[in-house]
Length: 224
Image (tube, rainbow, N blue to C red; front, side, top):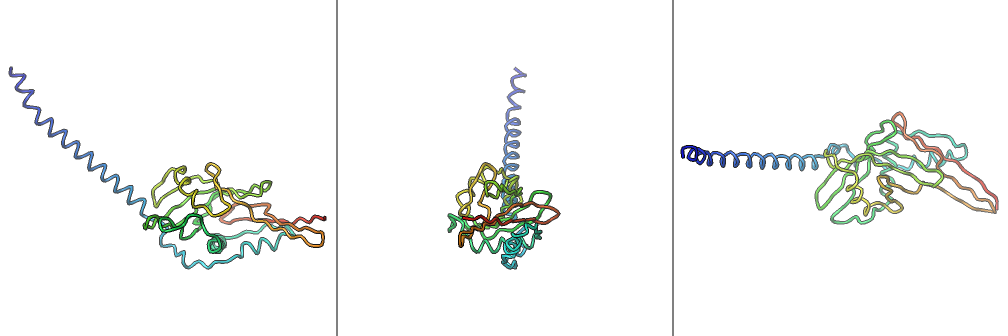
């Protein structure tokens, strides 16, 4: 009988202990959600001064000017960002509207064979910084530029690549498509025909190295 009384007396204490554990778990979950939201909306590149970048097509014109020699040209990250700003003015992304808008595109860093790319976006009225680490390459035979996405961040929060790319697919510019974790677009080329002669120019090399983007293009003449 005494044993039964003692066991019954412990029941309120057990309930209090269970309640304390439940409250502690709830607090931890709330704190975790706050941390995740804070990381997602904390944009590490927000104050980089994208509005001060002057659009320029120098990257394209210098590459085009060397097609007869096939000379390789090296471009700094500033050259690349000036050209990205120029192209961003020319291209209109699909599906941009009140709920989703890409504000700019910027290369943050070149490291080895990969680059960090930053896109400030507005999603449902909220400004969010999205960044990707990508490895660019040229498929000369297919005439395509390929950008393998290695990782993705929303703000400072690392996120899985798959869902981000699926969401981005509907908003890619014209002539862009997804191939798994790789964004693919047509490589720039030029073809002119006159008096039975056709001149074509296309990229023959694209690679990153020593903090620069290296490009080479070559012309080809055909008769008839």
